[in-house]
Length: 502
Image (cartoon, rainbow, N blue to C red; front, top):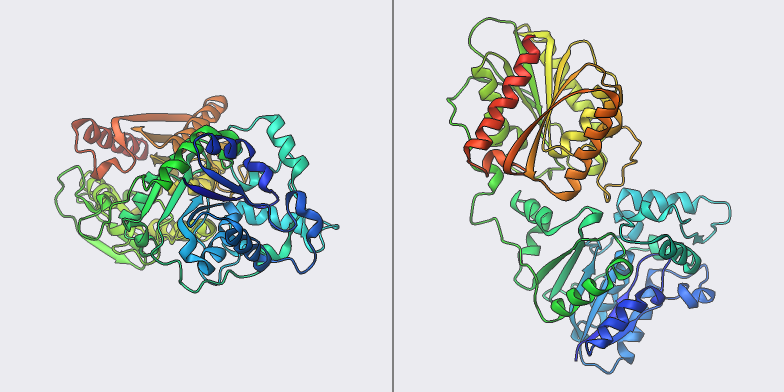
C-alpha cells in the first residue's frame, strides 16, 4: 500500500487536498494531508518566529508518526521547500518526491527569492499592506490568478479558497532552504500543470538547448507527467491528479532524453539549402550583405528565449537565423542576426534596449537604406515587438513574427496590460504591415496568445497577413523538412521583402 504525504502551497492547508485524498484512499492508498504551523486550522499557532524551519520540523514530525516504512511526499508550489527540507533529514523514509507544479529550489534558496515574478509581486504587494506585519495576507478572490492559473476553478472554489486561506508567515518565504545533499539519488517526479505555462515538451526543449541546469532531469529516476489544467489541480482535476500520483508512486511517467550524445534539433540544418554569404560581425550583431545595388533594405531577425547565458553556440549562429539572413541576402536585402541577451524572463527590458541598439547600428550603416527596415521576431522574442507595434517609427516598413509569443504566458509573471504585450499594442499599429507565420502543431498556451493577437488586430483593422505551416511545429525550420514548410518560409520572406520595396 502506498502512503502519501501531501503538502500545499502558500496560504492553504490540508483542507485543500480533501477531494484528492478521498480518491486516493478509494484506490487503497494511505494519505496524510499536512497542515503546517500557521496554516489552515493551525493558523492560531503562528507567531513572528514561524519560518521555513518551523514547517520543515512539522513535516519531520509527521513523517516520524506515520507507520508506513516509505512515503511518497508531494510538494505543491511553496510546499516543495519544506518537503525538500524534511526529505533531506529523513531520506530513508522517502520513496519518491513529487514536485507538483513547483520550482526546483536548491540549497540556500528562499521561496520568495526563487518564485516566479508574478508570485513575487503578489507576495510583495501583500507584504506592503499596513496590517501585514510578520504575516503576508492571503489574496483576494481576483488576485489568486497572479500566483498561478486558476483555469478549471469555479467561482465557488475561488471563494472557498479565499475564505479558508490563512496569512502566510513571512519567515517561511524569506528563510533560505538548507539541504545537505542527503536526498541525492532519491526518485523524483515532476507534474506540470500545462495551462499554467510549463510542460514536458517545454522542458525537453530546454534540455535539448543544452541548459546545464537541467541535465539532472534526464536521470532515469526522474519522471514527468502533464496535467491539462491550471495551478490548482487538487481542486480543478482531482481525479486526473489522483491517477497521476498513483502512477508516479509506481515509477511510471515520461523520461526526458539527454541531448549530450546527439545534436539538438535547433542545430539541425535549415530547411532551405542556401549558399554561403559574406558575414560581418560587429559586437553582438552579424550582417549578411547582398550582391547588387547598395544601400539596400535590411531585415533584423530577433531570436526567442529565454536562452541560458551559457548556451553555445549563441542564437545568432543557430541554423534558423543564419538561414533566414542568408536567404534574404541572396534576394537583395541585408540580413541581420543579433544576440540580444534574453537569458531570463526578467531580461525583457534589457533585451529590448539591445534590439533597439542593433537596429540603430544597422540603420547607420552606409550600405543600408535606413528608411527601409523590417524587424522579424521569433518565439519568446515576440513580446519585444510590442513597442514598435504601439508606436511604429517611420522607417519601419514591416513587422514579421514566426511562431511568436504575443502575450505573457500564465506563469511568466508579466502584466497582461504591460510593456511587452503585442496583443494589446497591435491596436495602435495602424497601417503597419504585419506578417505572421503560424504553425499548425503549436503549443496550446502559445497558440492562445496568437489568437488573442489576431482578435485584437481584427478589431483594430490592423494589416495582418497570416502564413500557415500545415503540420508545422514550433521551430519548424530545422525539424519539418517538408515542401509545405519550405513554401511557408519562401512566402513569408517574399511578403516582407515586398513591403520593404513597396
